[in-house]
Length: 137
Image (spheres, rainbow, N blue to C red):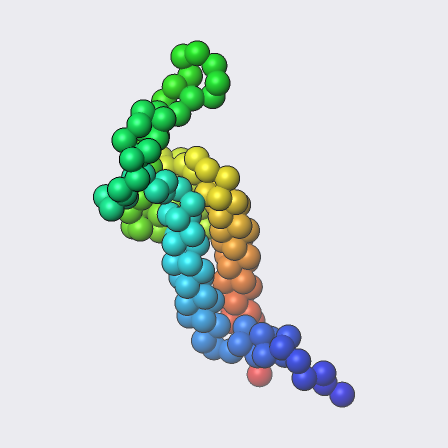
């Protein structure tokens, strides 16, 4: 007999005529979730306008270094959600322009995860289009 589990539901959804919109909705939802986490990982607490901690006024909160003289740089992140959404979209679409790159471990982890999500969704979308082109009687 046919084993009725969650895989049968996935197969039915992917073999239906509405598989492409379903995949695109899942892809969009995952993009929004990833953009939220990418932004949360990339934005430091001192960069928010509501930061009231006195340590945020120190130079160490704005300027970072690698422990070597002359490697100091100013920490600036694009903390807007739309920029984070753009980074996640570019990463999942495998274009990877590189104009905004992750600088924290959390941002890099989210970027790696969203790259795999992009590969997965693109392959599912390709399979759905190929399935819709097959001849059936």
